[in-house]
Amino acid sequence: MIKRKGLPIIGAICLTLLCWLNTGSAAAASSLTGLAALRASAQEATPYAVAMENGKPTVIEFYADWCGTCQGLAKTMRSLTANYGDRINIVMLNIDDPQWIDLIETHQVTGVPQLTALSADHRVQRYLVGAVPKPVLTDLFEQLLPPA
Image (cartoon, rainbow, N blue to C red; front, side):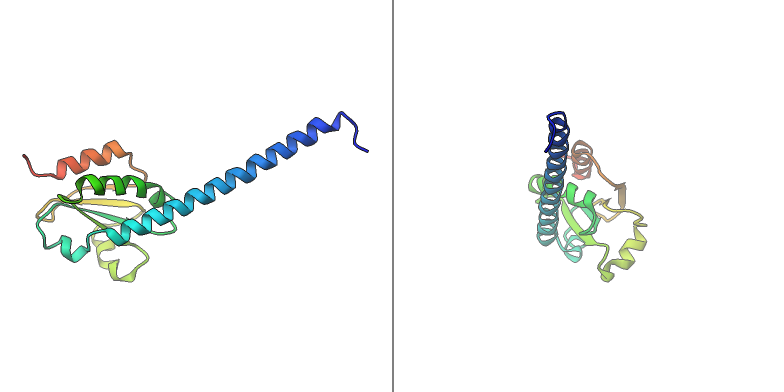
């Protein structure tokens, strides 16, 4: 038999456990959503070879599917692609794909996500690594555009 004094403690433990389980589920769902957005972005991205030939400024995102920060950035990058994708190439290169090893070395990728901004003539304008806020990215995209 459980004494009345123990009921609040048991209730608090159950409530804590329930909150912990829900937080884990929300994080897992968020991670799956981020991974789905990341993979969709990669499929819709401008191929590297096309970006190097079409005369537009380019943002290369070096990413990895397992990278939580990359997954978190995916929604922002999709939004920027919707706004700038007709004027700026957005290329996504998975660092786990061996075909990109030369570019990874050329751009000295030491962390993901790394965004490498290139002018229309392929000169590096800026490197950004990690969780970059949307206003900073918007400013970067605006700076890449040719003067009106």
